[in-house]
Image (cartoon, rainbow, N blue to C red; front, side, top):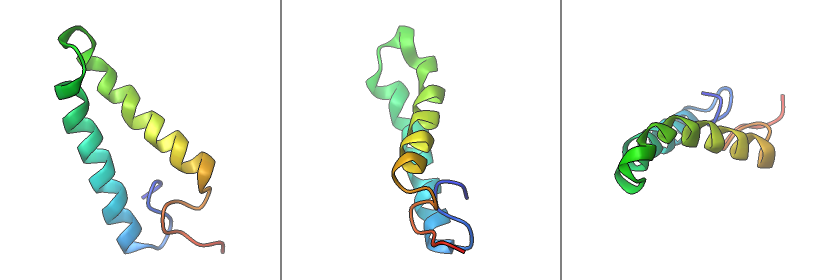
Length: 62
């Protein structure tokens, strides 16, 4: 919801897909000793999206 934008169903779907991919693929591509960094990867995605688009991916100003 935060990544996608308030009131945007398509943004919520895209945000959840992005979050799920980051959670699933980060442990696969990180070395086994650093697999727990996948949680940090999701917060990095959140921070990057909100830094570039404060209203979310498909959100719009109120």
